[in-house]
Length: 346
Image (cartoon, rainbow, N blue to C red; front, top):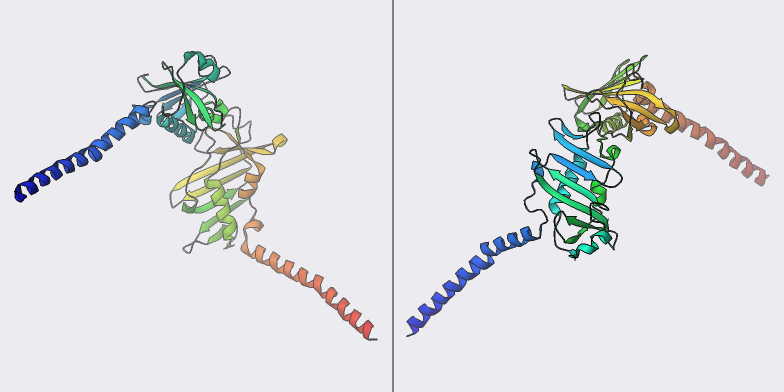
């Protein structure tokens, strides 16, 4: 009798174990995935399939298209879009959910500004012009850190976290790629600063120190040379020229030409041309890119150095002179104290 009871209890245990395993384990996870997909606004959206983004409001309309050379801004003279901004926009579409439904009343869509007339209409398409995502971005939410949004064809007005409109509502200028250079600064093995009159060549030695090899051979200030390389490697523009005419911006015969050799092979070259006096900016060009950029004088000052600026000996001599000058200043002060003591004793 006891054996039979034990067998029955063991059987019940096995059944319960199987039940828990499937429904709290794999089946539960599957249900969770289904629930997640059910709340995702565009569950089938694949950002790697996107080849076109269109954003249209009552004031402007911008279209981006993916080509072999990257994302280009339509109806421009080949302007390139910032790939990071494009990625941010596509990631945002993937993350939209139906978790927070603000309204299902069609009459309130105007209030939330999620209509074609009042909202920012966004379409994302693939290479065959199939719509991957189509939605309207409305006004900011009540906490100022959220945004109303509605999927095309749906009556649900959703409240999404974050200021979504700024991700898509950009002018051509703001979509443009401002990256002049983007490479690891530590890979620079040689730098050349050339003007129509002079040329300075710097090379990194086996110990990672920098040496001036032209117009004379001497040690360079490592910190200053590293700062030039770091600035150059991540250089970003603050604006753009109106066209691509090198002569107009004095880039056909640049004021300064800075060349960086990466490792022993790859070459990066920056041309510095005409100064825009009103805003104290300079027209520059990455030799490998069509675009002519604008950068600030403070950026130029970080990369444009004279031979005396770069020479380590000059820096040491200056420090010695400053030290001696400081000593000269303090000596009279000591003599004054001595004289005062003698006067008081007398």
